[in-house]
Every structure is written in C-alpha cells, then in structure tokens.
Length: 343
Ligand SMILES: Nc1ncnc2c1ncn2[C@@H]1O[C@H](COP(=O)(O)OP(=O)(O)OP(=O)(O)O)[C@@H](O)[C@H]1O
Ligand SMILES: [Mg+2]
Image (cartoon, rainbow, N blue to C red; front, side, top):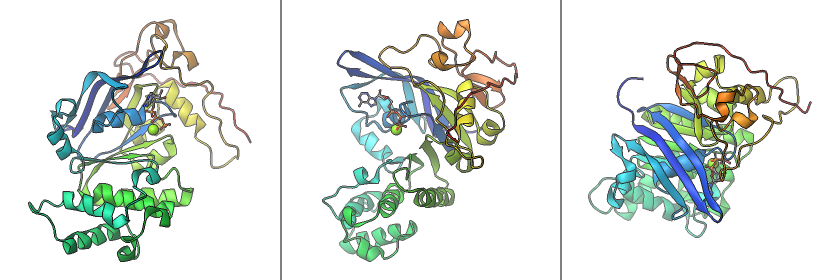
C-alpha cells in the first residue's frame, strides 16, 4: 500500500518477568496499518494479540512487563519514547481501544452520564470547560450515533441496569467520541450472544466506514475478519506468521498454521464443531528454538528447529514466515491437516 503508515510496529519484543524467569511473549512483531485501513489480527488464545495492543497504548502492567526491543510509530513518532503529555494526546484522539468485556471497561459506581461526560469534555476542543448543558447534549448525540434508544434516560442509569449489548454500544460510543484515527477493537462482543455480537460488529463497520477510521479487529475467528477487513495478520506464539490482503489469504494461504486455522473454521454445513489444530501453544518460559510453530507443524524440516524464519514476501503483498517458501519463489504448498470434527 502507498503512503506512509498510520501505525507501524517494528520488530517488537515484550517479555513478562515472573517468578522463575522471563516469559518471552512477543518475539519480533511487525504490523503496519494505513490510514482508514481495516486490519484483522487473528490467532489462538495466548498468541500475544492483546499484549501487542497494550504495548501500543502503553498500558502493559509494569514492572512485570518489559519491552526489550522494537519501535512503535504512530504518525511517524515513536510511542515508546513519548512523555506522558504526548501520550495523553495520542490516547483518545489518536488511538482508542474497545475491550472484550464491557463490564470491565465501565465503572459500576458511576452513571453512564457521569462516565460519558469525562470523555465528552476531553474530546471537544473548545479550549474552555463546556457547560453542563453542552456536555449533556453532546453525550446524547453520541449515544444516538450508536443506535441507543432513549439516551436521555440512559444517562441516569448505572451500567448494571443495562444489557450486555447496550454496555458494549456505550463503550463504542465512548471510544469513538474523540474521533480517533485508529480504533483497536479487542474481540468486541465475544461475551455477548451471536446475534448481538453481529449487530455490534455491523455497527462498528458503519461507524468506521463513515469516518474513515482505521481499525484493528482482534479475534480468534477467521470467519469474523473475512467480511470485515482489508488485510489480515496471523499471529502465532508471539510472531506474525502470515500477512496478506484478506481475499488473498482466503483464496490461498501459505503458512501451515494459517492453513490449519482455515481447516478448523467450523463448517456451516455438514455438522460437527472442529476441535482446532492438534497440539497447543508452546510455553513462553522456554519457547522452542527456531520456528515456534515447529513442534506442531506437520511440514517441519531440519532447519525449522534451529533457525527462526523471517517474515518475507512470498508473492506480491503477501508475506509469510516459513522456510517452505524461499524468497521470490511462488510455490503452492498445501498442508493436509487432520482436524478432528465432532460430527
Ligand atoms: N500480566 C501478565 N503477566 C504474565 N504473563 C502475561 C501477562 N499478560 C499476558 N501474559 C502472557 O502473554 C501471553 C499472551 O497473552 P495475550 O493476552 O496477549 O494473548 P491473546 O492473544 O490476547 O489471547 P486471547 O485470545 O486469549 O485474548 C499469555 O499466554 C501469558 O503467558
Ligand atoms: Mg486477548
């Protein structure tokens, strides 16, 4: 893609220092997001998706978490080198995040109105304090934008009085109130039932489309990113293993891990729910040498156990970190996965 990226994560390393040693979680992560682009970040539980985004927002739990290498550029400036006042500018107006569980994101002891007014005050560049009336009006407009009925009454409610779907919409309203350039949505709606989750995702689509907001959509599900993103990053055990335009990834994925994820997408027809890829994610205390996927990979070769494959272009715009694909050589390799299915 042309132009300069809005967000550039370059060779990011993060570890958690715990009793007994260091969990080496992020192992050289590279992600680029362009203005207005919709990017999916997909991987199994524990892959490091949330850790990556917490690093971007500078909210990793310290002192346990330690960034041991890399750069995170937002609009060309390194977030990791910013002082608190610069960070404050980035959060909200630059980057906003929606968390998986809306009950955690909202404070139970304040009304919706009280929580919204803080965000609204901050988001409007009036250069003065807004009047109570202005804050209230702006809060109501913001709630209307996320299709919540009766916003006047909602402002007086406590989070506990609302359904999960309503709380999620309020979180979206608050995240978008400051008109961020980049929205990070971490598994939005997974704690809700499927129909509501779908409504929430549709609402997000509409809002970011209307404002040309870039979005990073984090999910376990390749199904969710399929219709909603332009480009997908596949993450495994702290590494980006594949990165491609969404349509290309679906028509032809390269990495054996991605191919396994594709095989594990529950089929709508034919019954049966997939159990996923055999084996599990390695321990971060002592991760495998070489390719971190090698212990689980049906195509593993000698080199994979000793050397780490770098992310590189296998076909135009399509990168893969796997020794099956020598540079510039467009091979089509299909891994036969034996994904058990319960039906
Ligand atoms: N606060 C922490 N202290 C110690 N280790 C942590 C901490 N947070 C994360 N980790 C480690 O980082 C790994 C990756 O966690 P992360 O939450 O980034 O995964 P994820 O891809 O977001 O998973 P999920 O899909 O379940 O949300 C975890 O398996 C854990 O080992
Ligand atoms: Mg997570």
